[in-house]
Length: 292
Image 1 (spheres, rainbow, N blue to C red):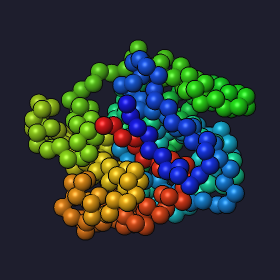
Image 2 (tube, rainbow, N blue to C red):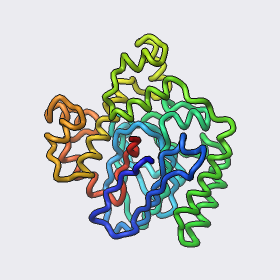
Image 3 (tube, rainbow, N blue to C red):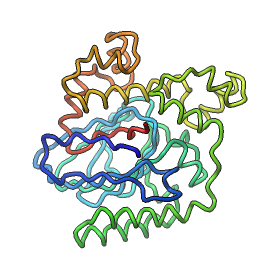
């Protein structure tokens, strides 16, 4: 079962609830869900991390903004938001007031399989889901708001989302060799040999690299780096007494200096500084869930 990463030790009980997908065919498309409800009485900046898995985020509380590094400006985010994979840290969220969200964490390539759009189309972006996933998103948003008004039972919110996703299953695409390669990178925490994955896909390494980038918007090498970064962060958050040197060794980096350079490349900060940013966030670390 996918484990959704949370950093709730310093927060009141009940701030966030994690749920697996219901038993059945959606398990191959959805990793899990997070329902988060908290009152943020001061402005909090939450980093948007490099990650490989798309998400759907439904806002049920106050509006919040993202500072986007590309534009250098703040932007109010839509109430139903499709967030694509991120090859680096693209933005920081500015959160205050009543922060209530229901987040769907997808499996790799689920957007392509369920909605006919590759992950690469949304690389580094956060867009209004209704513009890309159809009018049903607005109906779903109304249903979720009704549930929230009655007390926001997470299981009922999940049922609403899964009814929406189930309608897409009949047209979903089969798992192909590029998706299997991406899953192998997740299960190996980014350490699977790319030449072996290419061979298993039945393509030359050059063709494999092109096909992978078309699907995910990143080369397999970059994708593996982002997966390994996420694994290193989860190791440290799950086992805070583990030294960064031990984290670097367990995550498969050459040494601690190599890991620090990777962090700065992917999220703009070294490991300790980024951990402080994450720990100050109200709820779960915004990172793709662990697949293993």
